[in-house]
Length: 100
Image 1 (cartoon, helix red, strand yellow):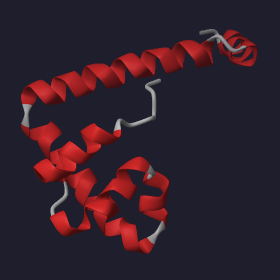
Image 2 (tube, helix red, strand yellow):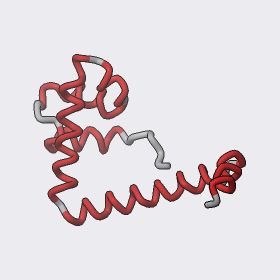
Image 3 (spheres, helix red, strand yellow):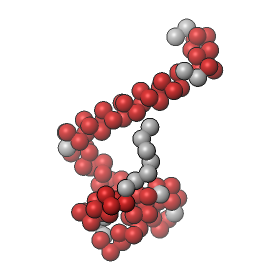
Image 4 (tube, rainbow, N blue to C red):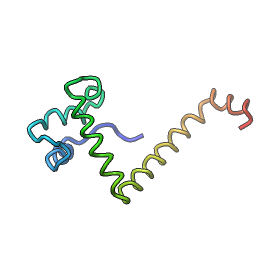
């Protein structure tokens, strides 16, 4: 799993470069990126969270290189998760019982 800590300077640069649709509300966008849970649970920040999410998804889906890199990262992270889950003793026992 990746480190969830986000570098502030990089976030600020992305927001200033256009990730924040409303440049006067950069502080709101920063809160959403730094604390996604607050962004989705707080009605004030929800719009800004949706803006950031939609913008990022659009960039990923419209750029083949970015899309493939994102897919590879997801696959790699998922492999690590599967390794952790399938090595737990209770999971191993259940898989043996299922014949897998």
